[in-house]
Image 1 (cartoon, rainbow, N blue to C red):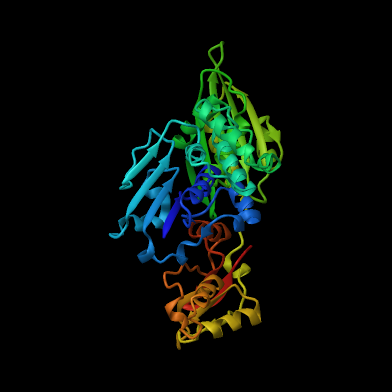
Image 2 (image 1 turned 90 degrees about the vertical axis):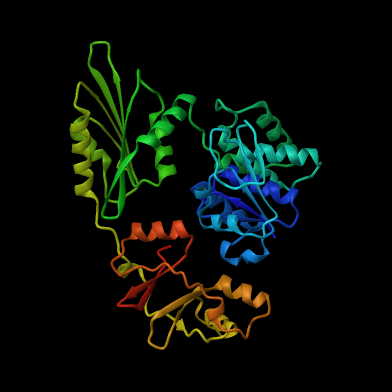
Length: 426
C-alpha cells in the first residue's frame, strides 16, 4: 500500500498535491493526518468521494509499502501518522515540498524540493511529463492549491512555473467557478511579512475555555489592509477573539496606534468595548485609531472588557444525549451493525459487565469488518480502545478542540467511570 500524507490542518496545496500524486502512483491513497483548513473542510464536504481519501484508522501499518509526504518536511506536522515513518519494512519515503527554508527531520529516501509557489506545481509538472490526463474534479482541486498558495499568482514567491501549471490545469477542465468560491484574495507582500511576525509574537490566554489572543506590531508607517491580516490570523490560529495592535511614529514625535478587533464568541460586542475609546464597528469586528496613548494601558483595558463579557459556554452535560446505547465486547460485528441501523446511531460504546467503558465502535469500523467478511467476529477486535473522553463539566470550546484535533465526531461523557452520555454538538 502506497500512502500519501497531508500535513495536519491540511490546506488546498497539500490536498491538491496529494490528489495529483494518486494519478502518478496508481492505487495510492491519501490520508489526512489531522484536520483541515475551514475552506478545505467545506470543499471536501461536497467532493470527498471524488478523491482517493481513506481514514487513518482503517490503515493496516503492516501493509504499508511506501510513504509520500507533501507540503512539509517536518515530522511533527503529520500528526500521528509520523509513527509510520519508523516502520522497518518501508520501501521508501518520499517528500514533495516547496519550502526551501525548512530544515526537515523526516528520514526521506527521496526528496523533491523546488523554489515554486506551490507544491502542487511540482506534481503538475510530473503529470505533464508523463502525459497523464485529469478529471475535472482532480484539475479543480489542484488549481485551488496553486491559487491559494500563490495568492492567485500575486505573491512575491509565485513563479512562471506556477502560471504554466495553472494554464495546463485549465486545459484539463479545472472549474473556475468552483475555484472562485474557495479562493481568498490573499495578502500583499508587506502583510505576508507581518503575518509571519505576528505568528511569532502572538500571545494568548484562555478565559472560560475561549482563546483570547493579542499581538503588538511596530511599523515605520501606516499599513493598509490590517483587517485582512487580522482575519487571516484568526483563521490560521483558531483564535476566538483577537486584538491586533499596530503602532507607528508620527512627524510630531508622537505615535499612532491602530487596534483591529475580531471576535467569534456569541455575547461579546466589540463595538460596545471600542466605543468608549473613540472607536467602533460591529459586534464581531471593530477598530480603534488613537494618538499619543500608552498601548499597554489600552490593551489591558480591552482585555479586561473582553474577560468580563465572555459568557459561560455550554458544557457537556447540556449537550450530551442520554441514556447511551451500549454493547458488550463479545457482541458480534453483525449484531452491532443491526443495533446501529435500528437506532440510527453512528457509533456505539462498548462496556464491560460493570458498565465501565472499554472501547468505541463506529459505523466505519463496522463497515470495514463487514467488507472483509468478519460479521461473526466480536467487536472487541475492531473497537477503538485509545479513546478520548470528557466529563459532564467539559466546556464546548474544549469539546470542539478535542474533536478537531483528533477528528472525532462524538465523545463519550464519563461520570464516575461510567458512560453518562454521548456528546456530539454538531
